[in-house]
Amino acid sequence: MLPFILKRIFQSFLVLIITGAIAFSMFTFVGDPVDNMLGQERTMEDVERLRAQLGLDQPIPVQYVKFLGEAVQGNFGVSYRQGREVSEIIMERAPATLELAALSAIFAIVVGIALGVFTAIRRDGLVANFIMSASLIGVSLPTFLIGILLIYLFSVELGWLPSFGRGEVVQVGGWTTGFLTESGLKALILPSITLGLYQMTLIMRLVRSEMLEVLRQDYIRFARARGLSERVINFRHALKNTMVPVITVIGLQLGAIIAFAIITETVFQWPGLGLLFINAIQFVDIPVMAAYLMMISVMFVVINLLVDILYAFIDPRLRVAAK
Amino acid sequence: MTDHPNSTTEAAPSRMRRALDSDLFYAFKRSPVAMVSTVVAAVLILSAVFAPLIAPTNPFDPASLNLMNGFTPPMAPNAFTGETFLLGTDDQGRDVFSTILYGMRISLFVGFAAVMFAVVLGVFLGLLAGYFGGWADSFIMRAADVQLTFPSILVAMLIFGIAKGITPVEHRDQMAIWVLILAIGLSDWVQFARVVRGATLVEKSKDYVSAARLIGRKPYAIMLRHILPNILSPVLVIATISLALAIIAEATLSFLGVGAPATQPSLGTLIRVGQGFLFSGEWWILFFPACTLLALALSVNMLGDWLRDALNPRLK
Image 1: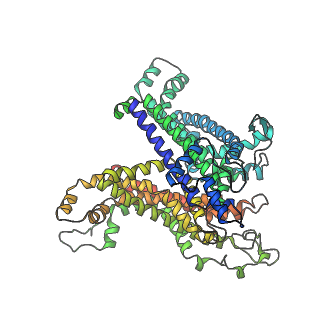
Image 2: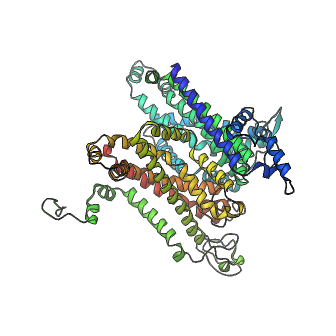
């Protein structure tokens, strides 16, 4: 068990060091920071002084180690476009994305599991079949078209929900939240459905196929023979045993939700990290791009590591294979 | 099938005859899904290729535009000029039908080129990893693992951003299409490399490879002339499905404003532009490009799914 975990941790560090190198080379090779910071009227002495001050006169490996040290402390320098500390901008934008991602994940998990169980139990029902076919179309629609479709239906035609922004937000400590006002909650509905829909269909289809598998097992027939009610059989016995693969997929999809928030945030002009990243790409704002890259990779690596370790704990076969 | 050629008594059948007699064509004739999606994809691809002949106007020729024609609804005469447009016009009086045809050209070009790039890179690296093994194998496959940690659309965005930063400002718009191809292609090579590596490992131990090695063929000749032709069918399947995904990835990037520029609009760019007119009621500027994108991606995707099942020996 321990060698397996150690090996995975080592691999995770490797991924972080590589993404760190990519982020670092973005600074070094894409545009000269000295050019960005000094104006048109500069002397050679100015350039030399700034180079020494920024440590750019040192060998590349030394610079890289320094960069990693700064990155670990969350220090990525100043945004070229906004002229403010990148860490400050990210802290300001993070709550919007995290609230959106959390709500989408809850939507995907709750609705996905509920519909998965429903379509498995009513396997031949009309409604269940309809849901299954609809989910196929849902999977093949690109995210941004789903967002536009929802905006058209609920904002343009029906006028029920806002089409962009977070609505009114309340400041709680350093955190801005949309959960406490009516307009904030309304503004969350369409983006979280858009963002969570793909994961919802994924979880639904997985729960359904796992349930169908489990419902064929002998212990379910035995439970039925014991005269247990359908509800107890379906939820206590069957659903519980489908949860192992489902939890893995949910874990892995959490990272995807944050990454795909980029698309949803652009459609809904949601002032979060994804929109920040897209604007950074459009204006080649390297510090913001590098910071986002490092943040996302830490998140993905941690999630993957946790899921792998969790899986090894749950599934004894993996433990043997790792030895 | 009375005239089925018997190879021992008759001359070798022509290529066409062989194609028509193949299992694949037989499966194709019996699958309505495959036929419908082929027809849809073929019509769309052909109309994109022959766009200059089909399109009523050239949307990139400023001389042919009349601002008075702006916002004409589909199939209705314009209030000022009395001209009628099949799918209406956008804000600048461009015929939506023509912009879709030209936009589809760019979407398809980027999609095909990106998949070609991913296939060449992935197949080459997969062959190397599978045939030589050792440190080349570990290095290539670890790189693939690292890249697989992230969603491919994120990788494509990042490559696009870096490449954009490297290209000089005055060339950015012209280079955008090529940068897009590079970004989508690089984000997609991993699955080709993995499949090819696996298949190469299997083929490598077969007798014909030993025989080729024995008569002194060079490793690259064995890889490209002997092994490669035997492992092409999974590559073909993944490439077809990849094409659909690449078209959607291109549309997504262009929609986000980090793809095809406004001077060379793809379907995604058209949807991005059209979204701005959703609230003022000009639905057709958004609706028709979106439908075209869906039809294109769905038909190619379904064709890929069918091909996967048809070429899978276990399903027969």
